[in-house]
Length: 408
Image (cartoon, rainbow, N blue to C red; front, side, top):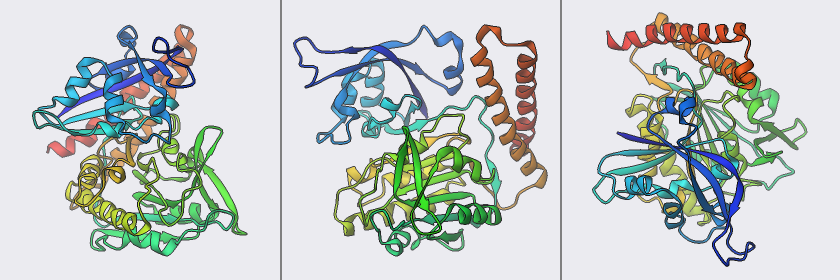
């Protein structure tokens, strides 16, 4: 499979076509790096490989009425455009998160089949310096489904929302615990006792100072907005996937909160996320059927693909009877754990599992130290440099031990 990593960097200019009214059709300038593996994204040697591009401002609008695909292809360099339109092998386009304006663009419209038969799939990526190995689990997988319906927001039909997600989930493969309504205290307590592998949220979302938030309940029934950092702090290391579903029985308070949360900075230690990035404007009945199809397919395929979230996601996206608008309303955001955060097995070796858990923590420690190093620049103290080197060595040793089991 071919991978193309697109990393964007903001520039200080706005480019406008000659003679164009700036209020009519603005184009915004960015620098773009094309990489072929994730490690290149962390290399200092790539700083001079960025190329300038300009993107039409209307692609960043939530009210774009036309097909965004031609506009997206138009803004990309020829090499990338040809790799998409003329794909002759399975291709993954990885849009690197980190620039809010880029995260708002509907890159999912670039999916499809290339001229020579290669399927192109689009994911978002919050890159991880040292990607940890998957966490080994046995069936049944544990899902915590949190459905909220605060009385000071548009009231949704919680029963219908929950049923559309869970009705076709195989009880032999999954244990589903439902928390509805959910206060912050109830969510923390349930997560601590249940230790879910998957955290699935359905309901309203919001935006706090440019960052995404989930809308939980206060004890008296009003809203309690929970940020990405607070959610990350609440989740145990066993939770390797977050699914963020917008409600379909009411319009979401602010659906932008879901993708903003999923694309939170790397310093917010969230696992891989699937998030609705847009409302779907079909009738409630049509959307309910599509929600049921998407999630039943996804959860079936997740087990069939032994924990590979990316393969399950694209299988769900291409399921029969889904409209183009619906399937493109989802984003897959690869974070810590990447495309396969779970490894579903018949049994789990306790020594291997311990190494996999340690590798998760070692990866996080190395990332934190790397961020500190970058803040110092060339003036980084030797003790910090040595600590980072030790963290890298520790991660490699632990990760190699865990991976060795798979080869035996």
